[in-house]
Image (tube, rainbow, N blue to C red; front, side, top):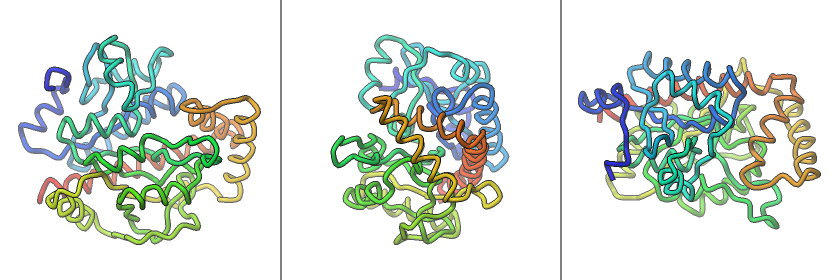
Length: 303
């Protein structure tokens, strides 16, 4: 297995020194944002993690290996290239075998982080149950991964283009804890609140770290969602973003867009319809997740 993992010098040194490490996905760079905002965001997020006492490990597939930590030049490559596959669980073996460039989704990043013994992972928002899934069966692999892979995901809730109610029902069925960080309700990515109440709330990183340690010490397999609301100053009005999402969903349906193409289409269309405000919000929420995720990683490492 170790032959497939390639650690950056920074991550290698962090492991030897027993420093906390925070995993980051690469799909948000290759498929989630346009250039140059994507690479600027990636480098800024890595900087936030370092400033808060942890080491960033951006994960991707490259040259037939799983890269745990990318150089500045590699980040630039993933940000600029038009020839990067979007990687979920089903794609990992094939992309390693064919030595293609692969940007890891939440599900794939969780798998790779667990292989690299990294327990804390920061992203924007998780995937979930798509609207209309009762007929399409379109459910993100992220949810199944959360049910079985021992990695905590710090995010701003599930992407608001999804059916949040069904997403929470799925996570509940699979026994995945959803912990609201300083909130009693599920944040909805661009907005701080939703109508969905949470059963678990934590206001300190130490409580989350202790909860994760107890869960995994007891061999209760599976991840956890740490739902961290977007900062107030950057949140978008719920009415505005919901109207935009409905318009974008209608266009996706009319154009026959489905499967893994839905999320990139939706994010691009929402950006267009909000005149770029949604992209600014997306960047800010990822940065805030990096801050909180670093604090959780430090607390977890100190236990």
